[in-house]
View (tube, rainbow, N blue to C red):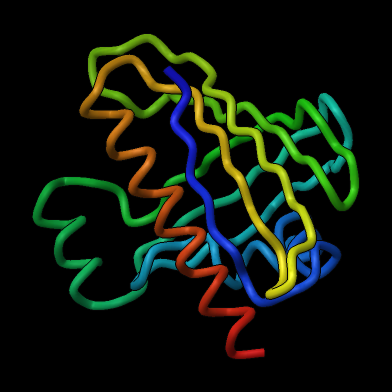
Length: 155
């Protein structure tokens, strides 16, 4: 069953679109606290790729990753499925990091609509292979939207 995450942020749909679809924008809000996101490829068209590396940079995250034998940097890839500026964006995330599980793709679709206080974001997240991993995904996407809301509120 598709998970739905909603948020209103204090920016226009055009500003949210820019933050969601440019390397400079993505690098400012995608990473959880203590991590950095570096976009290495962005081809904003259906079938185009977004490739980025998320790196632990804060001492406590670096220590956690090292303690658990995890790499400090992880490359991720998404393939765009829908581009309708500034209203709709869709992408399939390549899920190739789950231990003992074959790689697969997971779909996320985003709708942006102007509202009185800014932009209403509706994110539809296709579930992963089980409830635990779907919960992790939803928590990550929720964290991203929290980061975005903080960023635009501070601008």
